[in-house]
Image 1 (cartoon, helix red, strand yellow):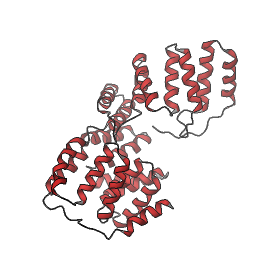
Image 2: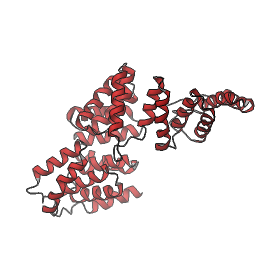
Image 3: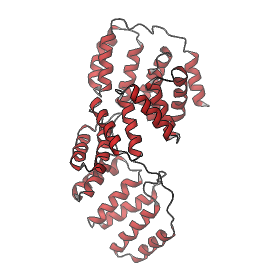
Image 4: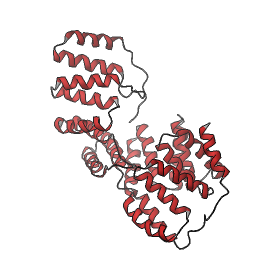
Length: 345
């Protein structure tokens, strides 16, 4: 209901264009702003926009640029307000739907994003941005094949959309198609070299291809550009910690797992992996604390199931010499069935 009222308010003022075409003389300068935004050059875009904003009192593209800057710099309330304003003054501009829809997805406002994507699809069913947004929504609704098809079509129509390229790569990643995923993430990085999540995903998909040295380089680059903001990757240290643990670089791995539990304290997998590492390092008390913490957290995606936690706790308590608790968790492990699990990142 709230989503319906939300968009009813937009539609009720859709005819109010105001000074929607009042961007005279700012075209080329605004083109540069949007090019900088597309390449992740947020500070440069802000500097470029300031004098334009001072000269042009009312221009829809300025509102859109400000919305994207607010989103990229971690100001979701301001971004939401500006995207809504852009939709009101430029309801015929498809960017009002695609950029706003992607923002809403990032804010976990899926119903509102779904409503926007449906409206956009009615207006322009063959627009690549609209198709990409709808593909994302369908994927989130469990219609992964339909979503993948739309995203592939959108990418073929507009191969220079970094957001479409990135999301398509995540679908290839989930489908265990690392070679296709690597192509997408390399292209996404070429368009936006400041996106740490693209480097992180690139590394994750290079590893199963046997490109360990390149994966290492991608992780290091991801760490270099991982700054607070829209693209900040809270799982980068977790993924790199796992990578290092597999390479038997346990001390370096621990440094990254220590960061990971600070960045994602409510994620079971983070505590579980650090518990395993601490067990290897013979830090038995910390391993126990980490594993017990993991046991208290839900994992609806089934990345780390209860059986894994119980088995780990049994091993830890045996090392601590507490046979009563070791037997307790051994019994729980025997009694716990393995659920059907969904593969995910």
